Amino acid sequence: MKRLLLLAVLGLYACGPMDDTTGTNTGSISSDGGCSDTWSSYGSGFFSSTCGGSCHGSLYTTQANVQSARSQISTAISSGRMPKGGGLTSSSKARVLTYLSCGAP
Image 1 (cartoon, rainbow, N blue to C red):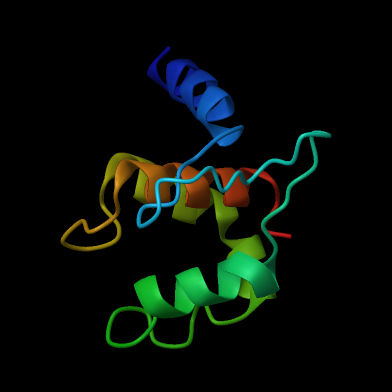
Image 2 (tube, helix red, strand yellow; image 1 turned 90 degrees about the vertical axis):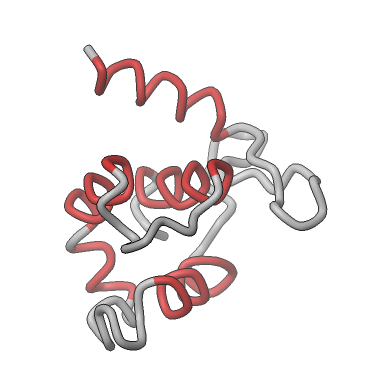
């Protein structure tokens, strides 16, 4: 039931996540229902800055690696286990979870 509620909330939020710095709607899902965030426009930067370095090194520096671990990454972020020490705002968390649910295109 908790998982269903989380998916419902993410589904509603996915249509309009806010940029943390400007407060503007960035949207991971476009108005036609397609995903607007891509590896080059979002995923690569997010995973290299949030997951790379001393934590996971180069594990999540390729789109293929992120795509193959989408379920595990989503679970870790949803549960709050990752990133270590927190650091994601609710809108950043919603955006990356939406990106992953879109297949990490």
